[in-house]
Amino acid sequence: MEFLIEKITTLPDDFDPQRSKALRREEKNAIASFAADGSLVRLWRLRRGNRVVTLGLWRAESEGNVRSLIDQLPLRPWMAIEVFVLEPHSNDPRPSSNEARSTR
Image (tube, rainbow, N blue to C red; front, side, top):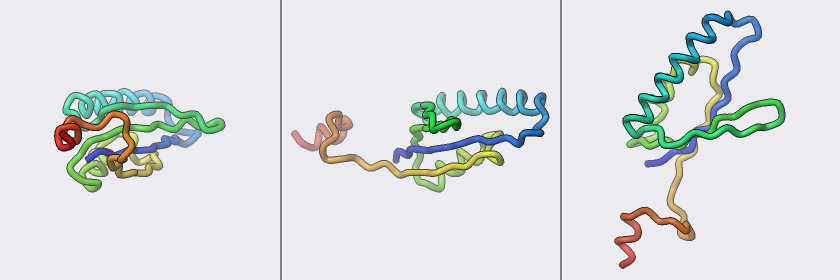
């Protein structure tokens, strides 16, 4: 299954800068690991006013599985997340190879 994850990370104003730097480094490593195993497919930034939202395309067996992966992120305690389950659309101009085979 594929999921669109929207996350906003907000650290408190008085958060220790050294701890922030270390957590962001750990976050980068965790993201690289999820990308390497195919769980994380893409990441984008979306600006909403003065906030930066991260959008991610994730793959997992279920919503519970993708939530478990996100819960492993070092910055998770400071994240607001929304999980959207993605389903194929009948008008998708780029169907998956499985769908293309089934229409032949």
